[in-house]
Every structure is written in C-alpha cells, then in structure tokens.
Length: 153
Image (cartoon, rainbow, N blue to C red; front, side, top):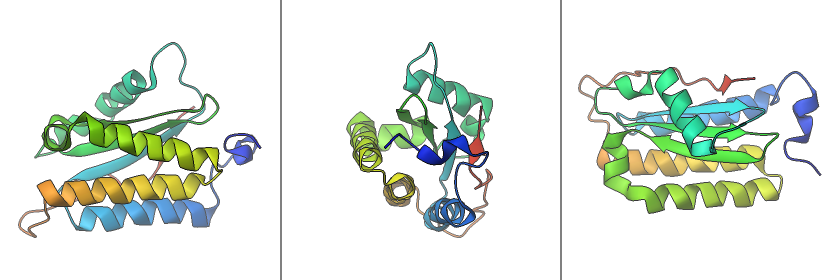
C-alpha cells in the first residue's frame, strides 16, 4: 500500500482525521506557551526535508513567537519525507536527539500506515516537551499561531 493512499482525492484527510490532528495541537498548546503547526505537501524536491521545513517555518513567520518556542511538523507525502523544525528556544532545551527520535517514530508509524496516529503522537510528545520547558502559566498566554493544518502543493 502506498504512502497516504488517499492523496489521489482532493482532500488529504477525512474531516474526522483532520479534527483529530487539530485537537491534538489544541490539547498540547493548552499546557504550554509554545506553538505547534503541521505542514503537509506532496513533494520535497531538490532540498533535504529539514531544509524545506526550515524554509516553511520562516515563511510562516513561526520565528516570531514571544519565547521562540514554535515547532513545525513537516511532511512531504509523495516523497516519503518528513522533518521537525523547532525554534531556538525549544531546540536548545531538548536537543537534536529528541527531534531525531520523534522523526524516527513518525517514520515507523507511517510504514505501518498509521498516518494520523503518527502525526497526533508526535504532536503530543512535542507538547509534553514544550510543557516541561515552557509551561502555560495562564498569564498573558495567547495562541500566537493558527492551529489548523497547512496544506501546500
């Protein structure tokens, strides 16, 4: 079975699957001042997935959060490429090994055709790391970035 076999349709996810991912983002963000976004596109051509994730991250102005604690989960479905790009604030706290583990876990779930579960799980894991280092104190915490999934080309 191919990676994301439902991509032949116009929509990437069913409404329920989309809601599962968005709810995971919202649940994670209630515990932290950090921000999580998911970006999905078909191809990652001519660049490494981490470089493309960085390009998307900067293009979405995710580096403008107050505490520099935004995280982008990047997926290029047709090319079977994925990466997680984090701003300096959270990256310095958890280190590269954390991101490598999360990408490896996502790859394992994708190979078992558990796409939505993989995305939701990485969001929960990132949310826990953000909570540990950037807990939501309730003071002046606002949702700095939209919670919806971003679909590229």
